[in-house]
Image (spheres, rainbow, N blue to C red):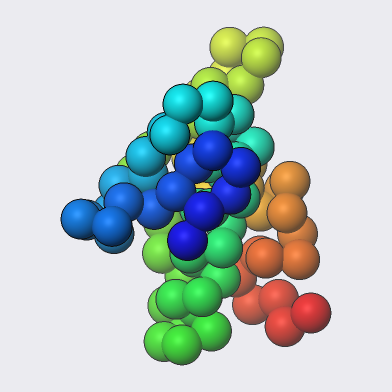
Length: 79
């Protein structure tokens, strides 16, 4: 599974790999996609351990940023 130049590692599903020029949005889309897929299959909304550093210096859980950027992939979204 890939988005832009980021991909979920083929060796370990809990790692996202930058293949050279991945941007934050690529990584956040992968986080949103993985969480959405797991929630659809299991009913469990996983929480990201990773933090997203916003341009203003604020840290927040990456899954919160991911769902804000990609609401169609929010856990519980069936669209």
